[in-house]
Structure formats: C-alpha cells, structure tokens
Length: 131
Image 1 (tube, rainbow, N blue to C red):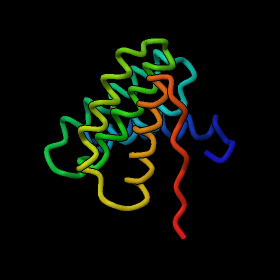
Image 2 (tube, rainbow, N blue to C red):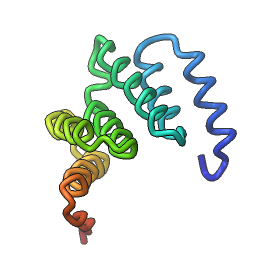
Image 3 (cartoon, rainbow, N blue to C red):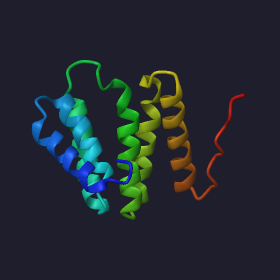
Image 4 (cartoon, helix red, strand yellow):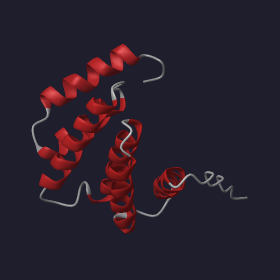
C-alpha cells in the first residue's frame, strides 16, 4: 500500500474479481477488508475471508485462520460489539497452534494477547526484543 490507498484498493478489488478458487478469494477478501473504513464493511469482508478459508480443501490457509479470526474480532470491536469480538479473539487463540513458528506467529500471538487485554481493559503487552 505504501500510502497509495486508492491504487491498493483498486488492485485488491481486481484480485477479488479475478479469484479463481476459494484460496485466492480468501486472500483477496482479507486485503479488501484491511482497507475498509466502515467497521460493518470490515466485518463483512473479514467474514468472507474466513468463509472462503473454511472452503479451501487443502492446508494452504491453515496458518491463516488465527489471523483471520483476529481481524474479524478487531472489526467487531471497532463496531462497538466487544462481546462478539471476545469470541473471535478466543477463536483466534484456539487456532494459534496452526501458525508456523517464526516472526509471523509471534506477531499473531502478540496481536491476540493485546486484543484480549484490550477487551478486558488491561494495558497492552510490551513487544519483546531478542538480542
């Protein structure tokens, strides 16, 4: 995106239109969701991403489920629906074991932990540094 939101929006919309299977549609919907300003539209697109991920017959999206659920929870939180968000954050936590070890997993784990703390009114966890 790098500050080119209109171009990114057009590219992600085109990717959605061009998707040939549930995997491609899942990825495209995820990116379309990220650029939605309206929380209800973010909910709708994140829900589509999760629905398409669930329809993928192989393991290509197994590591994405936690992040997709985290994003949906965030959209519900932004829409003022913390109880629904809390359920999606719990779902994200339940899928963390499927995320491959590494920086991406650390990022998703931190996101889930911070979301859970935020929804409970606790301060966010600080980022850990490795030396």
